[in-house]
Length: 276
Image (cartoon, rainbow, N blue to C red):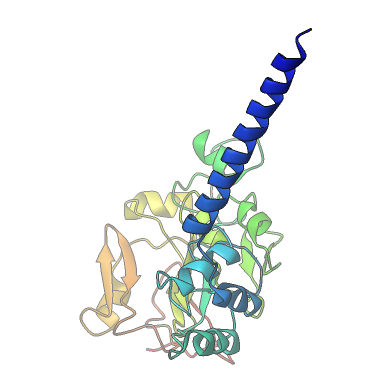
């Protein structure tokens, strides 16, 4: 074996190694971007739920976007006002906290209220049932009833009642929106706490069909529309909808003549009196 060849090879490899190391060191120094220390400080003021309610993959990514000016300081729906104010102090700006959001289940069609079209024997998942014919309830717009929304709530703010409808625990709800996002029929909506009056139905069928599929469905009769000022409640494809810009912030049901009692109030200390 030629010892000179071995020495030359070792020297060449060593030289290349030194050259590459020097190149990497220079590149690291030239290209290094120091992380803004405020990112870690913002992270400390976040709840660490990583729920995604802010629209970002997790708290760390949200904190980075806050520091980079791409996310609102009050953009975390789970954070407290004190937490948002602390982040504002870190960023040297005013806090941008908004009104608290609460999940509302816009459906009263449980096992008792809805007609059945057969026995569903598939995967006990709302998404799967929706894709495979809609489960066993005849209403095509209502809650399917398998509790997928409850499963994705990271704060135990929901449960399924004995009528197989999800129930929101207001005091625990943080407004993260996971339940609304997972619902394949958009039955769950995120509403400001100031919204007190609701029409708990999503059915757009004709009055005849809606009566057949659910005893609590809005039948599109328009009585509530005529009971309030113009524009406060409107009809949209056989379904009454509340205009919260002008109405719905006081927990008073507009008419006692709603044949299916589709209205519900939230946030009232006592049961609201029905207006004449």
